[in-house]
Image 1 (cartoon, one colour):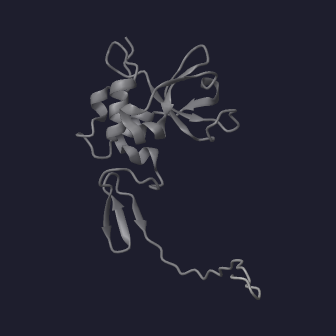
Image 2: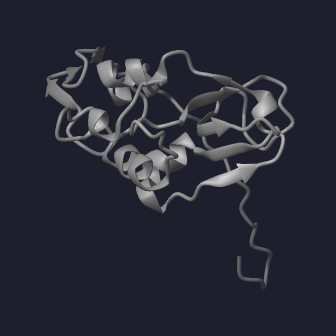
Image 3: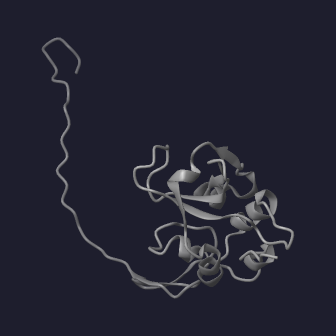
Length: 168
């Protein structure tokens, strides 16, 4: 019997604050599970040049069917909406996706930091310890320093000219 790389309990937010409560909810409600309790879903990346309304590199969660359909959702929708994010059947999407290698193993190790390695997304939950102009990710230890700069900006606009006898 094949064992799948993820059971729902593996990504419970109570185990690690880096785990997304919304992803956990979605997997619990919308994922397809095998008889051993492991999910059949994984995360997939859209290939460059794919003729779909999703930029190259976009992430989807679900599984590719043998008939070319992809059953799942956009990962960012899941992270934002949790169990409210619907699962869809996308015709011919599967042929334009590549699985993210060992997504669940990396997610179990790094949580949401694996999805956002640049630490550019503002996830709900306490993610940072800030001290002056430096901050450290409480989930993975990634450090950032705040930069400061001044910009001189020239602004112009067109205004009406008042004519004699007319209000401006």
